[in-house]
Length: 217
Image (cartoon, rainbow, N blue to C red):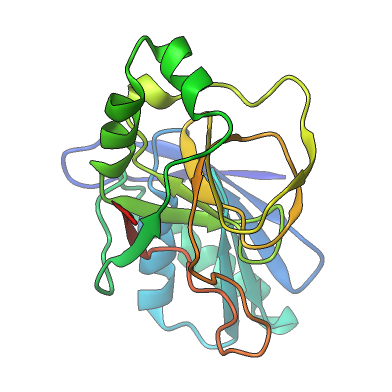
């Protein structure tokens, strides 16, 4: 485990990141809690380093795949990058997802937040969300930008089956279940848009950095 001092932008203090070798073909970069993972990912990509492959973001980390012989060079370059705060990164036009707001947890969310059902729907539709990372299941995108009033914990007991297309919230995130699966998020509604198709390239509609708007169906 290596703790590396990395300077922030001109107006930001010095930050610390950790570089964790993952075998000889990848390095995991652990970023500070307030750092922008997508911003760091964009900066790594902009370096154009030879031998660097897929860059996989998560909530607080970035996995950098690279050729085995390039590991030391890549890690040395990572140290030179600024650690920036999150900012809106929109590389394409927003993906608009029509939603039928008829989820089984919608009324309960309204009760817990002290809002009407209509207010919950309006708050969920208001932001422009960004795909922070993907995980849990193929095509499952974690969207950031959820209003603080809707940030509720997961269900105490997960459901064994959640229908494909279910639009849900949990913690700081909102998401759409790309296919039927177990899950403990609170279900606000559903979309008919297909978000994962293994026959497409890429198979996932929502990828890190994409921006999303929810609209009433």
